[in-house]
Length: 103
Image (cartoon, rainbow, N blue to C red):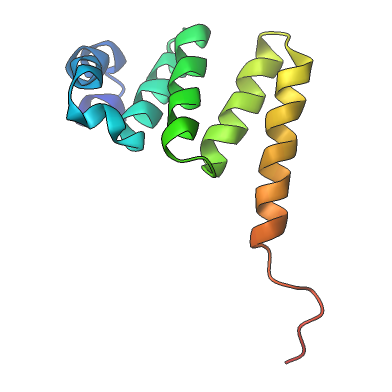
């Protein structure tokens, strides 16, 4: 992950991709880092796959939903972009403190 954080994306991907074939495949942050790296490299189908894997493992992951909404918008899939935007908005609304709480 140090390679990804330092902008050495290709090297970071070479290190992280093999982990998708190990027990770490069930660790959602692995897929999140991969999705982010693919996104930065302009590999949008791979980025989408990475963020979809995040949601399989962490269904309420707001960052993955927002990334998918953006990626689908960039690929011209307005329906899926709206789907993930709406899901993210719903999660945010559910996590927001009630506005009518008395102090």
